Image 1 (cartoon, rainbow, N blue to C red):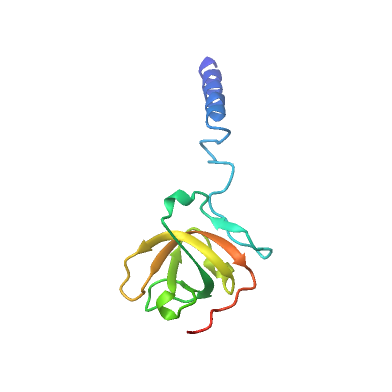
Image 2 (cartoon, helix red, strand yellow):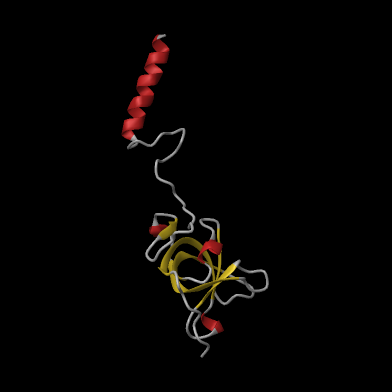
Length: 135
């Protein structure tokens, strides 16, 4: 009985020292979120720590990559040479189709895409985005 009480007290102290995060269930706040039906301008989804991402881009999000690279693309003013092809495991990019968004992530070497980014965080700039006009 004494060992059980000691274990319980140790676990309680550990819970307090970790700021309320349980070692069994993890942190109380989710690390990644997925946009729902009520997404609005300014909402942020994905990873909370931007220190992990060295690259950012902003543009109109569309579904589709290029020759198997990326699942989505970020169309930007300046034509096809300014397009950023995207992949991610942090959030569901389909939810942002047709929106103007800002993304944070890391650039990867690509075979076909001029710019391929693994996205870790997405911020909605305008839910009623418009594709850029071709130049």
